[in-house]
Amino acid sequence: MTMAKLRPRIAPAISLVCWLYLTVALSLGAWVVSTRVFLHWKPVVITSGSMAPKVLAGDVVMVADSVGQRLDKGDLIRFRTSDGSTVVHRIQAVNKDGSYQTKGDANPTPDPAPVAAKDVVGVGRLLVPVIGRPWMWRAEGQTAILVAWAATTAAAAFAAFGPMVRPRRRARHPAPAPAPEASHA
Image (cartoon, rainbow, N blue to C red; front, top):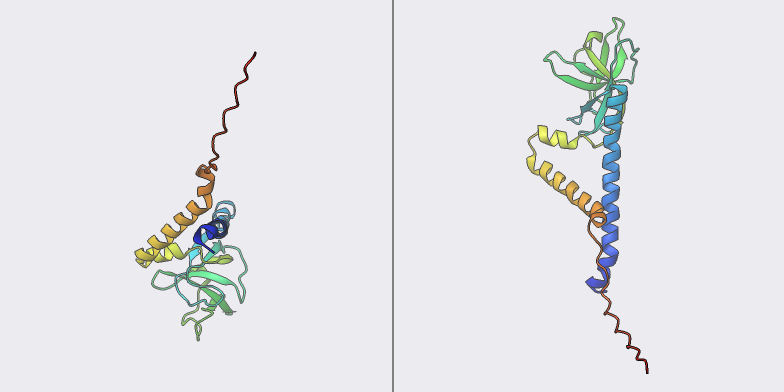
């Protein structure tokens, strides 16, 4: 089969793949934006593998305010550490003094210090996979990957929406022969 015969079949397939990619990306983004706007949950980009395999680097955990909520074993919490940074780990146990023993799912041992209730910043309510990778790449200084992703997304948008914007080529038909003139005798 020649390339000229394949082209009409390849273009719609590429357009479909681009539409699927954009639909997934926009849907994931909509989860982040809508829960931020309507429920006031805060997006937290996961930057390490300590919560793998359930929560991966580049995933976004939408965190709700934990004030007044009862936290229990298995809850995903965001808390302040002694150095002022924040971490998202799972509660392994609730201690008698009201503090929490936490652990990253992928870590072999629990976190060294218990987390005081006052250090809990929020509780994880929704996991949005993959959508945080561009922010992670930017934070890590991986400009080449970020630019490649942006270019790929722009190309997908052009491939998906381009046919809507570009005028279709009309098939060229030979001009009709002029009708013979009628003569009156």
